[in-house]
Amino acid sequence: MSEPLLQVQGLSAGYGDVQVLWSIDLIVGAREIVALIGSNGAGKTTILKVLSGLLGAASGTLCFRGESIEGASPKEIVARGLVHVPEGRRLFRGMSVLDNLMVGAYRRRDGRAAITRSIDRVFTLFPRLAERRRQDASTLSGGEQQMCAIARGLMAAPRLLLIDELSLGLAPSVVDEVVQALERINAEGTSLLVVEQDVMTALELSDRVYVVDQGRTTLSGPSEQVGKDPAIRTAYLGL
Image (cartoon, rainbow, N blue to C red; front, top):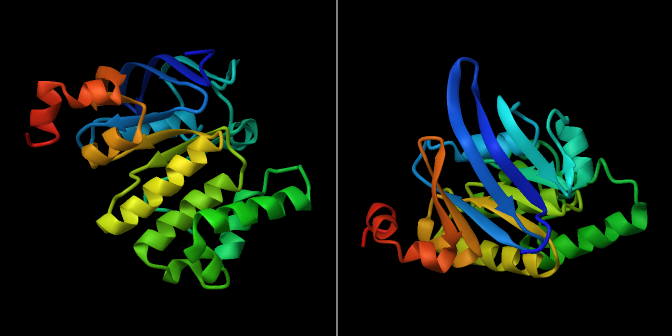
């Protein structure tokens, strides 16, 4: 791997007096898809919150594109090219799909033409959103809302997109559609760090995977290799 896009070393974090993460090491390379898997409450979402500046780290180093992002605000981190699509989609009720997408571009300074190209891009990736561009985003189906949340993240022109609980609550056919879009997004140059409850989907989508258990990374490696690990097959794949 060349110079990492994102490098995390010795990350510890928590909420108040409750420690959730212990000495997490994590790397995401350029044009790479990395997945975080593990049981509910393992600390996966907390990792994404620290990376996006929503939660401070107790210790450790966080480097993105060769520069420290420790202590940076969420706005500063978005401006540097690291964008978080949170669990639960968090779309703005009462605003159209198009208006929700435009919110994603609020930190951009590259002009109206570039933003228009980004709109065209996400409508190509997610044709359903183009059909519903004037519809209140809160009235979309669950799958369409997830597409809108991802598209809003893309409107910030990220170098690295963090996606929390990619397939939660979605029908298998919709998951397939979203995964195909993510593969295309990655092929166009955007790296992805994905938290995914469906381990099989995570393994098939990603290049590498980290297993998070009780706030620690217990296993990592190429997805194909990790998927063959007997403990993983028993614990997460029921095999």
